[in-house]
Amino acid sequence: MAVSTSAVPRRPAALAARARELRPAERLCHATGLLLVLSGLTHLAVFAVDGGPWDGPVSWRKPFTFGLSFGLTLIALTWVTSYLRVGERLRTALLVVFAGDSVVEVGGITLQAWRGVPSHLNTETPFDTAVSATLAVGGVLLVGLLTGFAVLSFRRRPAGPAGMARAVRSGFAILLVALASGAAMIARGVALSQAGHQQAAYASTAPFKPLHGVSLHAVLVLPALAWLLSRTSWSEQRRLRIVTAGVVAYALAVVGAGIWAVVAY
Image (tube, rainbow, N blue to C red; front, side):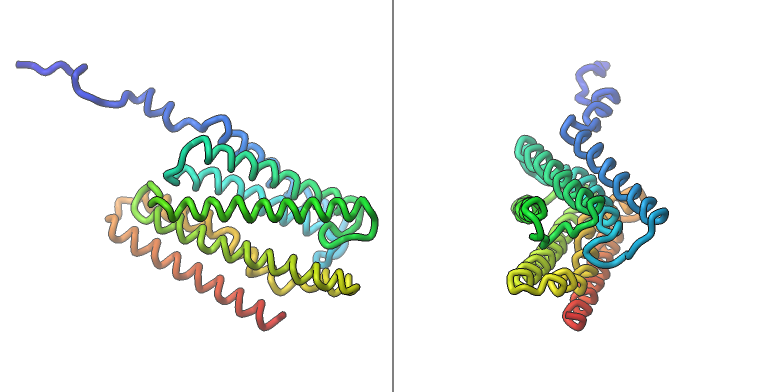
């Protein structure tokens, strides 16, 4: 007897395509991240035309690097958190808050760069103090949001192809190193600033910047590696070994940046 094909459970191609569509909050975060990246690249062009110092508390480097880093991190988190086994409402709320906070952080840094004054640890005027305090509060909020995502990644095994769970969890674990190094920079700078050593406060963050920068983007690089490997015909065991090797290599890079920070401190 022939079996009706309508009785066979399957997902039509159109339904599968709709399932892969980005949700409104994800589209918002991707668009915001792209704008932040474009803002950073624009300020790299401004630096090329206007010149000025690359290092130091007042330079076009800050709106460039912060715009690029925040934009890439927002886009990466929007994608990576789709593998977390967490309620969609909670994930959406955390992502939207992170996007808004990213705009505030990059906006404050960019504003101060155009004003020609330091953005962080700057208490020269009431307005500068307000901007600096806003950036500090925003930084604390970022730490809380990213730590929350890291905790969620370890509460339940992330979904995805072979190696993705390991990549996501390792990326978030290394991201915590970035948060710790950022907190160390702020704490050291605030202590020196309150002691009256303003220029030393600005200079004190330099040793931690490589460590902060390298560890910040593991949450993008490692899951991207797992995703790229999923596009190959290699076995799951082989892909998992490559992801593991990538995690070890990235961890060694973070350790190296940490050693440099200690030596240069």
